[in-house]
Image (cartoon, rainbow, N blue to C red):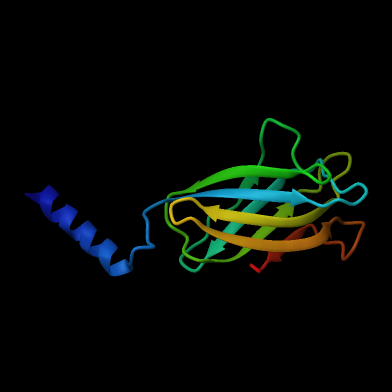
Length: 143
């Protein structure tokens, strides 16, 4: 009997919150490095997705291959225990480590797998302590 009540309460809550609410979410993130000289980075890169319900928390973007090279698109997956809602912005940064930490970021796309929604976050700027405005931490708004 208790399982039936808990199930009914869960379904009622989901219906009240709307069809776009999910208990967890999977995001596919594409990060495009620009096509300018020395655009790639050797630094560790981190992203935070900020939605109107909550934040993903900071996640390192890393894969077995050589990520963030000039004119390269790198794809990553992030799973969150809770749905973030509509994405308001992303925070992207690096730790300024490695031989050539400066990085020219072209754009980021985020695709929420369950709803098939996609957000585009243009940057078209350096994240570098010795170039542009000397910032290695940026907040990007969706276009």
